Length: 294
Image (cartoon, rainbow, N blue to C red; front, side, top):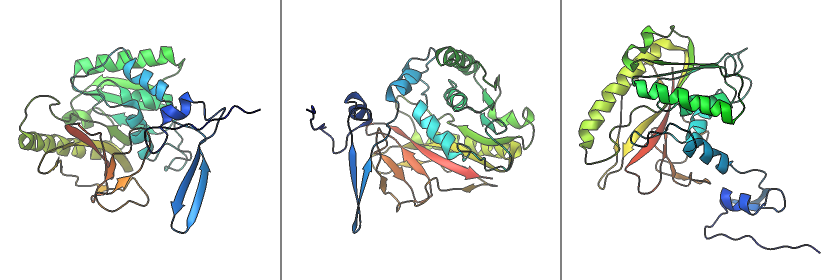
């Protein structure tokens, strides 16, 4: 008396969409088999990513700047988690999410600040050199508050160049800087080597400003572009004096290895400089996620 069937997919694994649309979490089951040397591990899927909600927060927000490029909400969540402040207790003794100060100095459309608000952080700062970006951030945060019934959002948004940010934010007052800076032109034929030099200077200047306002042992989670090239990918190597790169993965695979994932993370690559690269086939510019410790 049980109406049963196999749920199949064109892919080797079931995506979050297939699991959700076929109601496998509530009315069915997805069993996962993992072979580990001489062991066979058996698991049951308890949850999948809220892809509908993520899509709504991405494409439903009123102020979008497709020309400049926007960080997806899911990637913003990943970066916030990589800062080390996502789980209680905080790495800073006696500090919870209310006391942790997070700064996005290239706030753009306000995605990182918005996701941090949803994750219940209470001390958020967003800055950008563009007046339009500041207006877009405010507009998107107000939209978020209205659509997700947020009554109390603690944040400051103001216009500032990254080169002068240390003059406007108190020294050693920020615990984590989480940001996707300007990644260079997204369209047309560009001189990638010239863009590389320009971005390395911008990022180097920014990191030295960050050093002044970050607390001791503060963290930067930052995206650097990787320009996909037929012969060889072009990576950015700014001056990180005063910081060291921290591996975001406990047991990092060998250089160039692939970390399996679901929902767009199948192409998440780890590098020999302890960073992870996030992108999809066909993209001209991939994202390198770098975690820096002061």
